[in-house]
Length: 368
Image (cartoon, rainbow, N blue to C red; front, top):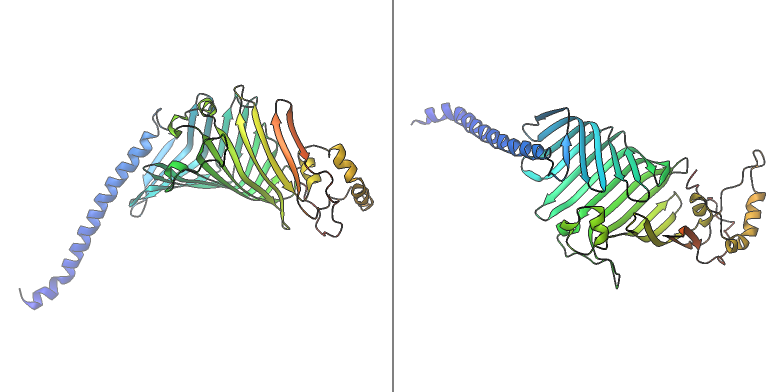
């Protein structure tokens, strides 16, 4: 073959090679799309961990994505004693063909509802948002990461949110400990709880309870049980396995400093009642007690009587409204518990110093 012939047909050979590569990739993408469709179709079965239903499913995404758009989408997980349901007018689920272990999603005006009729007289909580997104990373050991983000979130419902909780952005990140590349860590020391099987991390921006002041929220908690996580098929099974929720730390902060720092442990009784105990530290103990609808204890009131009088004298004369509580120099410790005799929140050291008058920023209103 002459040099002239080679030069003349070289572009066509290159085009042919590109065509073969594109065709091969198209076949590969189609095979991955078939697997993606099978995974989505499997979610319609009653034995699926979550069940997906929708009015219409549109597949696409070539060449870089595998995508399905579900209109009037509902994702539900139902067990004997609880149900979690996610609904959205439009749900988009995407993967990259070469990353089948990572799934991304977009949600239009999503809502998540949680129902547990046998817990605390009936849990019925709903979270909504203007839009949302999620990511799910799996490995052979389980869920390595599940992240859900709601924009302009609103949480309401019994028994905790008689006043709605609002946030400009709310995030929840979870993972199964068995799916991590490290050994499970016990709850700690001589604790009677089992190992953590789930870990959750929460973050919130401009979080308000009712018409309270905006705060930043961060938290970390673990769900523990004694025995394999696969056996925890219901809340009753989890309780029978010694299940607890360990709040490793939750912090609410304003623009000045952390306002609430708390840790605790929570468990369910056989009748669905909640048992809880823990500690709370705050430079604004009066604001915390007011947030729970409580007045200071008798000892606390006596120790802060002069501070209350000082705050009353500085009230706005125009509307006769009391000034916001002042901050203490150091965080004040409180303890909380929820037992048969009800919920109690008390100061551990009522003899602490009075609020510092030289601190410019008053305490925020936690709940209004």
